[in-house]
Length: 285
Image (cartoon, rainbow, N blue to C red; front, side, top):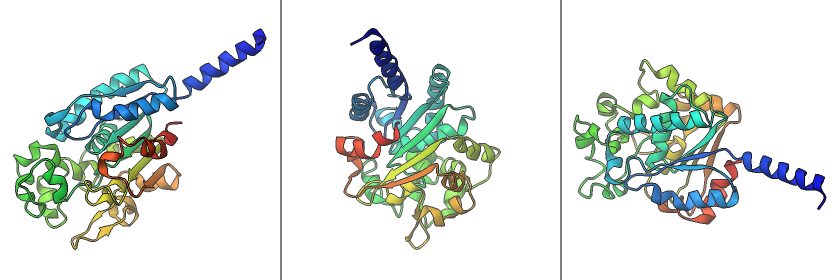
């Protein structure tokens, strides 16, 4: 190999390696960074040289702490990462972590995130007994509001995004998190909560009908139940039609991607390498 060809090869190689933006990962409920290791490894296997920040903050039972507490701590981490990578990063959150990650973007006006990937996350809320029994074995969906829509219940992350379609009055009265970050209720931060998401180059929302934990599974796409338990798709709900957090604008600009994949259980999204390669890796370029 001639010297000029060798130099060209090195330059191209360095350019290829630097093309991959750092990836920041936030794990799901009752787990930690170790649960996201397979995604971490797959990213580095297929995108060599990619810097991956796999946070272990609020691991295990501490993941049940108040959502706002978690969001502000994660925001501190992202702020430091953005200082180190002003050209931008990709943010990926799984399950509850995807909801926390989205809220982090909304409270951080100067974030450097270019793409946000929400991996099977309850973006419109959660209402399902199967999910509850993973954490609160004795609770049933129909009566969980009696705990979650109280001062005590709002000290838990699950209570903060529990969205009972049959008790919307109590949801709006007691919930201190989800109705605000979704701009269902106005606040002094309503404009910011929308504008910060509009800074994204792309938002990718991933979910599927066989998830079995996120209930309804369409919540991963901002779809949700109405008062008669029928699921209203995202684009027929006020959050989209009124562009409350910018979803309609992002969609019209070609920056909103909804991915539906059948046959994937909730705990396969981040553990099955075939799924990871199909629904995550293509969006890291």
